[in-house]
Amino acid sequence: MDDKAVENLQFHQDTVSSDANSPLHLIREKEIEISGQMLAAKRQADEIVAEARKRGASIVSSAHDEGAELAGKQEEQIRAEIEGEIAEVGVQAERDATALEQTVAQRKSKAVEYVVAAVVGA
Image 1 (spheres, one colour):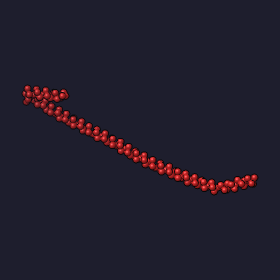
Image 2 (cartoon, one colour):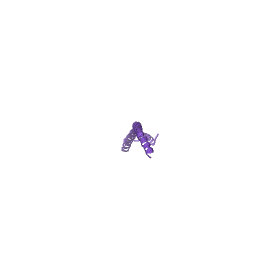
Image 3 (cartoon, rainbow, N blue to C red):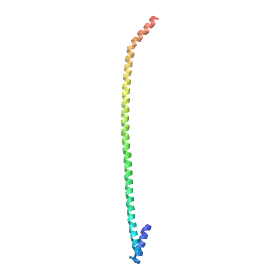
Image 4 (cartoon, rainbow, N blue to C red):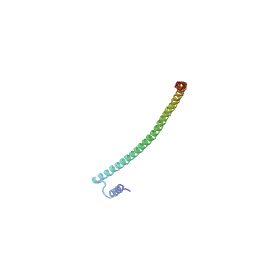
């Protein structure tokens, strides 16, 4: 038992043995009543605060999960974009290599003619 409950029990025992109609007794009785109401209100407030903390923790947890999910989706999207760009660069490099090979093939005969002319003419 807490001190307040012991005090209330003692008061009630004293009341039975003394005059219950005295002004001091009535004041004390009201004080105990108000004190009980205050304790009930405090208990109720504590329960409200505890519930609010639970809801807050739940909100933070769901926000964390949602953030992780969104981050994963964003990572996948960026990865897909980068892979697409890499593929484009590869295709462009192949085109450039093919164009360079064609240019080399076209200029090869001119280069041979130039070298032959330089050797024969020298």
